[in-house]
Length: 299
Image (cartoon, rainbow, N blue to C red; front, side, top):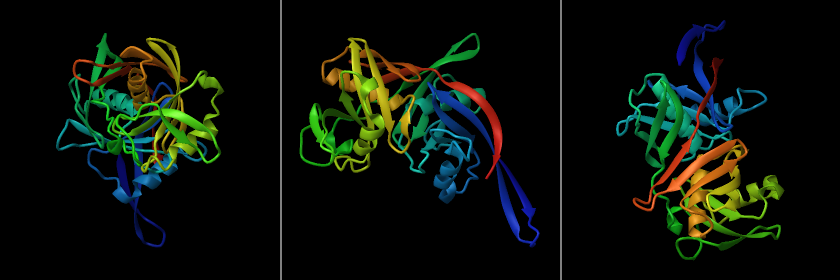
């Protein structure tokens, strides 16, 4: 990031920020990556900055703004802001892009990285072949299945498996709730391509059962090791991929006895490989991260 000072014609001193950014995506889930290791961006302007930069008509365009920051408790810290200015706890596709960029920029010089997030310390592992990052495997931690920690309101048991949720429009669904540091509502359907996602997604996202809103996944089971998923992301809308959503889906599949613990999750942007380990209860996600272009933008 470059900071330039200048005087206006009225002799009023102003500060102009010129941001260096990198555009990246994980299976089409795209992000504006900004390295702010000196923490110069004003805290109170970050939500508005996300609104400005993520706009696909008047800004750069992205599913989120990702900041690379120093950390007192890990190798590096990641913050994410949705296109609506809200700040989610975690993003699986973003952290793969984040880890790749940190290594390529020399911010970290090891293949196993500890990243501080609002969901805790997340540990991506770079898979390097012939000097280039082929994929990133992320230890996403243990799934959170306790109702109040997802969080969900209302009385009921934990884990929340095959519970009924009803919309004001009359539709009702059987869902499983999982948190991967952020809340997910997983619904199994016969054919994901027939789901009216733009209609059901926002209604479920803002359902009163989820006091902090929720991500919504509709899932079609193909086989014991393969599912197809569409996602409505909290604060972003429909996206081509969601890493935490794929992890939550794999957990929900096991809880509902629909697949094995290792599963390929096919999304609109490509495939993620998810494993819920029986040995340590942790979820591992493996997938690509792609750099698209670099640039500068005035704010």
